Length: 110
Image 1 (spheres, rainbow, N blue to C red):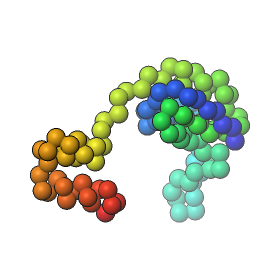
Image 2 (image 1 turned 180 degrees about the vertical axis):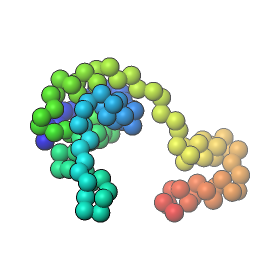
Image 3 (image 1 turned 135 degrees about the horizontal axis):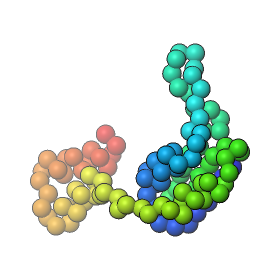
């Protein structure tokens, strides 16, 4: 398994989709005994926090292939989460009682 790290603005979901589309065999699966697709040990994955991105991929994939996708990646703006929208409404004092209840549920993971 190989790993590359990048420190640049990103949209992880979008980057993940771009890698899947442009890198053959990034996601590897086998058919399990139950007939369902199962991830193999060298299943590619993308993870990150803020501008830091880590990409893990199989040994037989050329790193230059991954680099090319990352170099062309132009992140689309991320949509605010429902919780972010509710927090903003709270700051502006334009939140309803039902939205306060929804916000509390979301914050508590309920």
